[in-house]
Amino acid sequence: MSSATYLLTDTNETISWTYDRFLSNASIEKKDLSLFGFITGILCIISIICSLIFRIIIHFHGKISLSTEKSSHSPSISSITTSTDDSTSEF
Image (cartoon, helix red, strand yellow):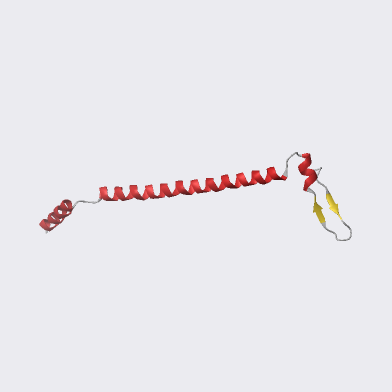
């Protein structure tokens, strides 16, 4: 950061940052930085979309497995009628 300098003008009292010196000393061009930022942004968007798709698949898989568990644990009609017959025979 020592290569970047502050330029202070007394008349306007504005501070301007000179990126050109910093970038030339680091041997990185502005085009490279913008391309790097673009690629990083695209990769972030792809990772967010993939994680959302993964969460949606897990969510619907959980609902499907819960619905199959409920249907397998539900009592059958014959067991309901036998239980009501047993309860009426006691009275």
